[in-house]
Length: 115
Image 1 (cartoon, rainbow, N blue to C red):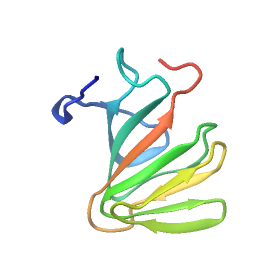
Image 2: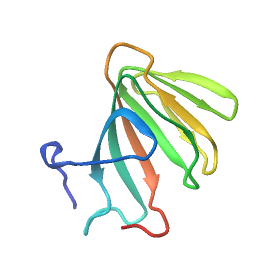
Image 3: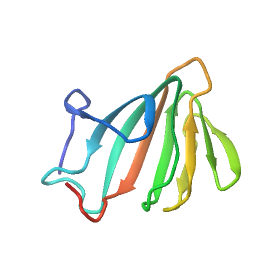
């Protein structure tokens, strides 16, 4: 079992994200998951990501607040306990259009050249 205490979660920089702080909860460490990693993203009001795409699919689970996700010509507002899956290669954009911090769990497979 690999336990990461929230107090020990390490921050990381996510490319093309703004007004967002991210913590790695699991992955990229010995004894952790072998096929995926999980992160926790805190989007400040006005914060977001994209538009861009990665070759990897991703799952977003909103824990608090709301985020607007645009992908494949569709726009949806996700609130607490809502989730979505973005296929690999799909251009997506995430924005926190509200005045509260939005917190989102992110689950992604490792890139082929994981560090």
